[in-house]
Length: 151
Image 1 (spheres, rainbow, N blue to C red):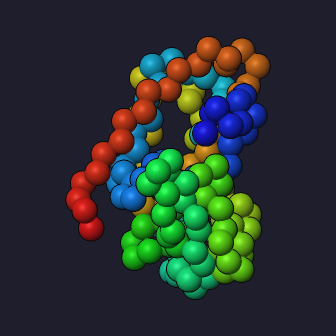
Image 2: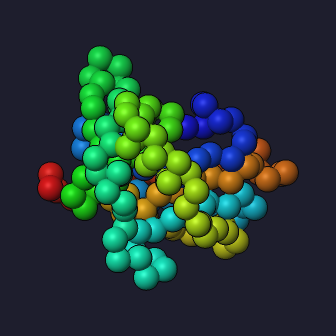
Image 3: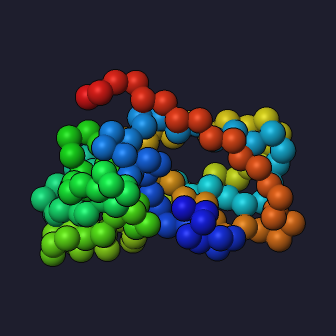
């Protein structure tokens, strides 16, 4: 994602969307505070009962992963797959889903304290990075991903 967007803001995405089974959990860690926010959207916040519209289930995306490219919906069971870098809409429903996910209301996580962890449910949450703030060009976030099961 950073290779595509550089220091500019990133779009909301699922880590590992290019994999047939993306990780279940993403942990971001900052040893030092910085002023570049992590942007989040959660399907479980704001009283949302139906966390994705039908077109996100029915629309088909081409997911590019080198020789292992495949077709997949953005929402399947209890999992989302969203990443405009590796996913291209293959039909009208997928184009609707792409617009829907780009327009979601978000919250910002500020890295204001040292030794901070942010645990993200990669199945039901999307995340992004805001534009790199002045003075944060050398900021470092460590990332770990976990897959709990093959559900």
